[in-house]
Image (cartoon, rainbow over all chains, first blue to last red; front, top):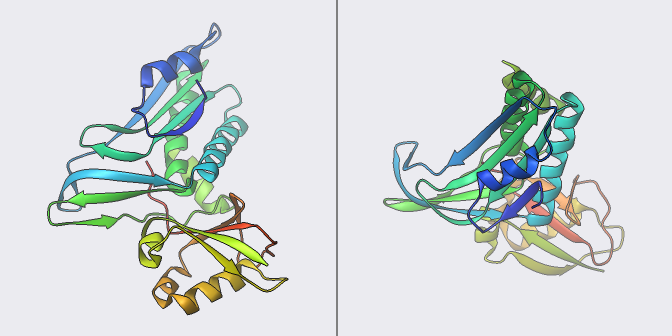
Length: 158
Length: 81
């Protein structure tokens, strides 16, 4: 299993955790994050989401996040899978696994990774809600925006 | 020369297509490609200040030169996670 992936298949946190934690005899911590599709957003009742990606660039951006994480927390190993396509309420849209000798780094790297996903990975969600549908738009993706990267790092280490 | 234009999410909806092939002058930049596109489809222009661009699936800049056969992508603000 690849450590980073963009896939239309349901995500498997357990399998990704096994992959990232394989041979982890010096590691003492596994932190995970799972993003779920929830049934409400900004006062709207959400029916389901549709995710779209620019796949080759999304994969590159995920690999970049792994590299950035390595730069800040050299002992952390990271796995990061993002789902695309049609997702029902309650399904996982993203899973992140951070394995490290100590818990502080594992938690921080995990948080950093999801903040960076939201900043620089070319993936979009189309929200189908009761009464309509809308493309959600968050951050202007710019991996070289150092202010954004530092904001993610501050959030991770708060 | 010819380039392939890729559009995503709401930009794709506004254009009515996710992939277009367009003829642009030699020495064209990403900006040249975008300008040609917005002349053709003025509704796209609202994204000029908020979008990102990529050339051959690498993030790039409006001033970057494009070459024959390049894939030039215009990306609305992202909303993954």
